[in-house]
Image (cartoon, rainbow, N blue to C red; front, side, top):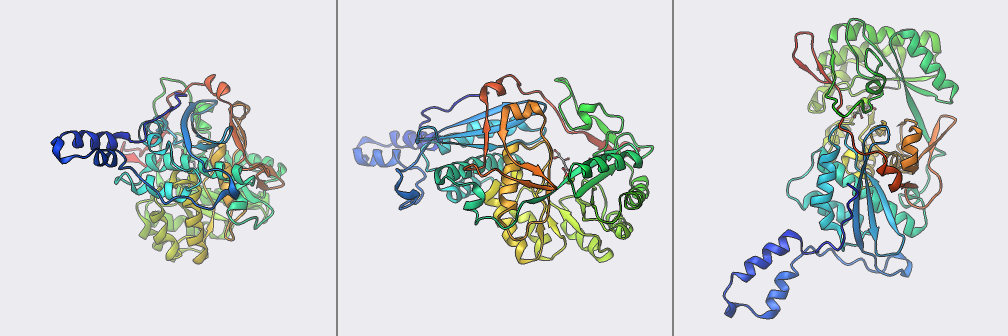
Length: 465
Ligand code: KDG
Ligand code: MG
């Protein structure tokens, strides 16, 4: 990868076809002027007038896609501008389908951007979302998020302000953060949770292996250490298959939380991720059975297709519900928010279309007393984590932020991003998003094929992982 798009012809494919069509007409029908007009039939957004404190107009000059695997695969986007030294960094990583996004960016999206004004973020978002006619989907929306982040980064750098200032300024001292505690048994989960609490975490997500099942989402189980951490194992890797059965899962999880409350006390906030595995009545039972342990939230208890089923869960329990990391459309969020079927919307900024999309989700959620809990796993890069926090600390209805600590190898390639202290995340007051990419370091770690695990029931049928 690392291929710059230099001097891309702004006419693109449509301009070329337009020219071919024009050339087929008889000479007598064409004046020179009309040919020129046909050639220039391109997208023309409203001119950006009177902005940017008298600075000269800005153009996107190049879009570079960087695919790298320091510890795990990341797709990074670098958008260059006509102002010397001014560029934006975005993250367009889609775990397990990284190259599809990289190709989309390189082959389809970059040619549309060169020559555009990077300051017109909303117009570019609309153009990339509605322009191709085929809208949405995780690949397209991750690519769009990568560009969106880079444009917000450029705007912040140009304004000499961190992005959260452009979003309305600070509303809180930091973003309350949660981390993961996973174990082969209850005692191991407790041990990991205690270590997190000693590190300053006030909120912990707990997952435990289910006896008799090979591997359970979010736990070490019998996986290789790399696979347990969701990381790249080796080039020839194919997906590992886990086994899931709802009955033992539904018996064990409430007992885990009974144990943790007894051992850790009432103050630590606890959550659990069902990872979209359950049927509606199973989810309702789990939410009900967890009530005595006062979870901060129960995450993704249903598959993303079944939004109406949240009604059933809601009717049977007061356990707070969170949902959304698999959503890749703003409109996915609407029914759950407007019917108040969830308490936390937890879209992934990297898969729903970036900051431009997230601030709309947050604003809609605010009107229905739903809070945010943006997805923050290790398989999205530091620029998306930074974007999470810029939004978190500038909205009124922030709830909580999932976080990870990136390993040294990743930090060598991508610098900056959120910092953690005393239970809260924050972003440094650098202009823009505050991240940068070391392209030389990125080259040391080429892409390695890797998949998320899959799951099956004991009878061999496919199960959601
Ligand atoms: O790529 C898949 C991960 O992002 C997902 O499994 C992590 O569910 C997750 C979480 O809540 O962090
Ligand atoms: Mg999750």
